[in-house]
Amino acid sequence: MSDKPTVLVTGGAGYIGSHAVLALKDAGYGVVVIDNLVTGFDWAVPDGVPLVRGDIADQPLVEATLRAHDVKAIMHFAGSVVVPESVDNPLKYYHNNSAKTRDLIESAVRVGVPHFIFSSTAATYGTPDVEAVREDTPQQPINPYGMSKLMTEYMLRDVAAAHPMNFCALRYFNVAGADPQGRTGQSTAGATHLIKVAVEAALGKRESVAIFGTDFDTPDGTGVRDYIHVSDLAAAHLLALEALMAEPDRNHLLNCGYGRGFSVLEVLDAVDRATNMPVKRVMTGRRAGDPGKLISDNGAILKTFPWTPRHADLDQIVAHALAWERKLGER
Ligand code: UFG
Image (cartoon, rainbow, N blue to C red; front, side, top):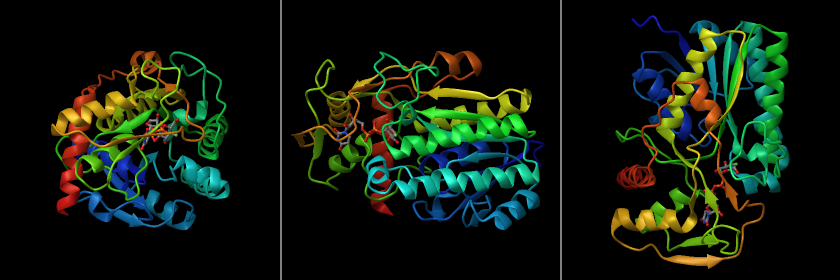
C-alpha cells in the first residue's frame, strides 16, 4: 500500500482527466473517478481505479465517495468544453461548469477535503493584446465557456479564504497529444480542436481541414496557439497537488503552456511530415471569437513548481495524437 493520499478525479473518464488518472496512479497515489460518461468512456479509466458513474452535483453521492475513500484532494476536470456551443447555449455552461462546480465545492467543504485543483483555461483571458499572456493580464472572457470557468476561479478564491481548503487553478492553453504509452487519448466524437481534426483528416476520417482565417496579424496570417502536450499538463497537476499539500495556506493561479506558438499552417505541416502525405487544406474565413494569437507567459509555473516539460515538441505532440487516432480506429 502506498502512503500517498487518495485523489478524487472528476471527469476522469475524459480526455485530460484520464491522463491525470494515469499520472496519479503511476506516481503511487490512490485514485477514484467520478464521471457521468456523457463525453467520457468507462474504458478510459484504468483497471483497479474505481469509477463512480454519476454527477458532480449529486451531493449525497459525492460526499459518500469522498468519505468512503478518505479523499484528500479533488482534481476537477468534469465540465463542458466546446466554445461555440457555449455561445449558443450559455445556460448549459453556467449550469455544468459553474453551478455544478459550486455544489461540488460545497461537498468538499462539508467533508473537509483540504485541496482542490481546477481545470481553468486561457479562454478566461479573452483576446488579450499582448505578446505573451501573464497571470495578471486582465481576464475578460469573450464567451460563456471562459466566463463559466472564471466564475469558478472566483468561487475557489472566496471559499479558500473562508474555509480550510487551498486551491490551484491551472489555466490551460491548447491541450493536444496523447499518452506516450498509448493508454488513452482524445476520443470524443465531433472534435473541433485543430490537431485532433488534422489527424482525423490524415487518416481519412474526414475530407479536409478548414483553415479558419488567413488574414490575422501573424507571420503567415493564420492563428497562432501555444500547444501543450496533455501528459506535461497531467504532470503539472501532480506538482500542483504536491505544492498544495506542502503549503496549505497558499493558493496558485498559473498558466499552463510552453510559452511559444505555432500557426495553423505550421501545425498542418507537422501533420504532413508525420504521415508523409499532405492533408487537404481548405482556406475559409475566420471563426467567430478566435483571437489571432494566444501564447502563455509560463514564467510563473516554471518558478513555482519544479515543472520540466518532457514533450514540448510539436512533432511529438502530433505523433502521439496520430498514434492514438490510429488506435481509436482499431477499437
Ligand atoms: N483551427 C482551424 N481549423 C480547425 C480548427 C481550428 O483553422 O478545424 C484554428 C483556430 O482558428 C485556431 C487554432 O486552429 O487558430 C486552434 O483552434 P482550436 O479549436 O484547436 O483551439 P482554440 O484555440 O480555439 O481553443 C482552445 C481550447 C479551448 C479554450 C481556448 C482558449 O480548445 O478550450 O483554447 O482560447 F477555450
